[in-house]
Length: 76
Image (cartoon, helix red, strand yellow):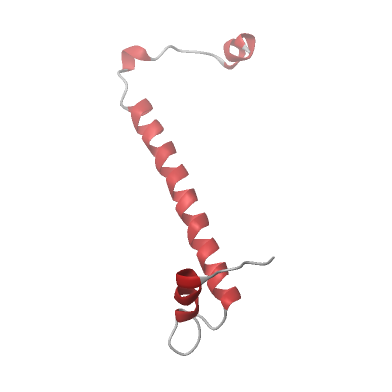
């Protein structure tokens, strides 16, 4: 994998590496960025699911209809 950075992005990345930075090398920095991005995406997915579940569980009991497993299979 090759990543090319120029100008301001390159300067910013380099400032985070070495003695004055938080990372020993560029690979470590890139891995950290990817991990954080992955965690952000997973958190967003969880929040969407949580919102859907909260909506479902806040519905009135009158909106629920009893179903058996066989009735569900028959519908599909």
